[in-house]
Amino acid sequence: MEMAPPQIGRALVVIVDDRVSHGEREDTIGPLVTELLEEARLVVDAVVVVPGDPVAIRNALNTAVIGGVDLVVTVGGTGVSPRDVTADATAGVLDRPIPGIAEAIRASGLAAGAVDAGLSRGLVGVSGSTLVVNLAPSRAAVRDGMATLTPLVAHVIAELSGLDD
Image (cartoon, rainbow, N blue to C red; front, side, top):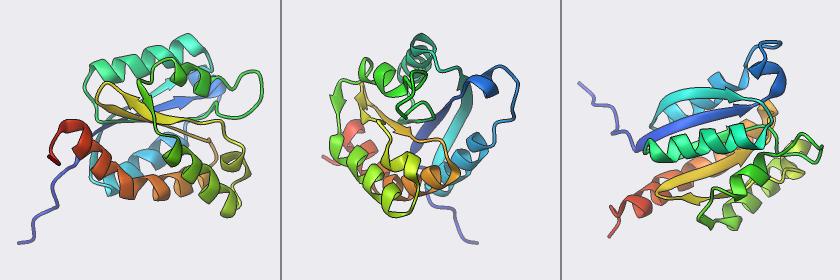
C-alpha cells in the first residue's frame, strides 16, 4: 500500500471579485486554485469571496494570519483600474515583502501570454508566519502563477516555521 506524501501546510484562498461577492456570478477560480494547492500538498481551509474593498480584503488577510494558515492566495483586484485594490490592501498587512517571487510570477505569466499576470500589481510577502500571494484573476494567470509559486512554497513554509534550521 502506497502512502500519500505528507501535507506541507494549510492554505486559504481569497477571491476578490465584486460580482461573485454579490452573487451575480459563480466563482470558477476558487475551485481551480483549491485543486492546484491540493496538488501541491496543501490543505485548503476555505475559499473566501470578498468585494474589491480594501477593508474587506485586509480583514480576510488578517483573519487568515491570525488563524495560523501557512499560505494565503488572493485572486483578483491586481490590475490598474480604480477597483483593483488588492495590492494596496495587501501592502498594509505584509511585514516583509518578497519582491523576487512577485516579479517571477509576473514575468512567467507574461511569457505565457497571460497579459493580466504581466500587468499585475500583485505582491508577495510574509505577514507573521504566513506567506501571502496576490494573483491576477484569469485562469491562465492562476495556472501559471501557481506553477511558478508551487516549487517555492514548501521551502518558504519550512523557513517560516523554523523547520529548516
